[in-house]
Length: 330
Image 1 (tube, helix red, strand yellow):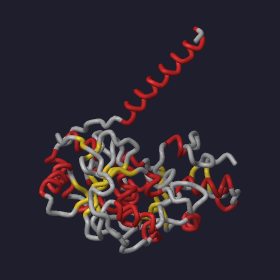
Image 2 (tube, helix red, strand yellow; image 1 turned 180 degrees about the vertical axis):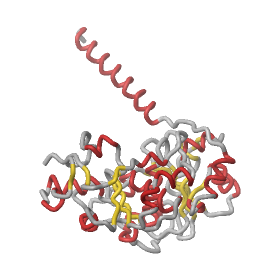
Image 3 (cartoon, helix red, strand yellow; image 1 turned 45 degrees about the horizontal axis):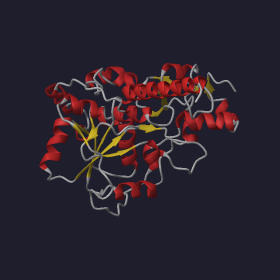
Image 4 (tube, helix red, strand yellow; image 1 turned 135 degrees about the vertical axis):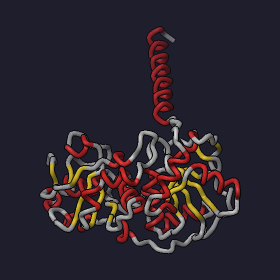
């Protein structure tokens, strides 16, 4: 092997090693410092405290073993997970091929098959959690609500708070760890939780609606286009309220009083709210805050979000979508 080839191989190895450590640093779970007393008091003031669980409460349920409970983490990396939890990623529950664009909720049959494999029954308590950013946990919570599953709870602060509470990471659950079931959804009422494309079109410029853009500022201004979208822009007239404004520095939800101040214009409006982002994940987080924490019932998560909207505007050249888009570059 000549010197030039050896240098090339060495360069590739260095880049591969560097890439590995960059990936590990990006996916590593940051330990969150959470005051248990304050967290429990905060949650008790929420409209639906039964929809949220603390690490201590979850651990107590798992140790006690009397309640049928299945814990599901939503994360790309399974390096640090709650012991015995199942781990899924977006393709597992919002990767249906029924649409020419991605990010849409899976079919009832696909979701039933997933929960059957996890040994879930209709009365099983499902706890969703994520790591470093909790929007995927909220998206999965929203998905199970579409299925009509009653007992769903979101772990406040996710894996970060779990580690911060002194609980260790463990092993991912495998198929067969629980006896498989034949899960049948109590419902699959997408329209109850999701805004359709036509509904969003009708909501633009309509005083009976508030459309919330929960993406980053660069996406909202059209300066940035995330992978999967067909072009830049925003839905015309949408109010910009980035989803993470509802989150404390430690990754847990803010207090009810803080959230009421953030969303005061929404709460005092008595209008129907449609939240959107890139693919209905970050907007599901805002949907969770408004409905489960603040008790504002007239909220829909736009599942298609900017991916669907930009598909019809840019790819399909739908004039009705183009005319209802700001900051677009058609």
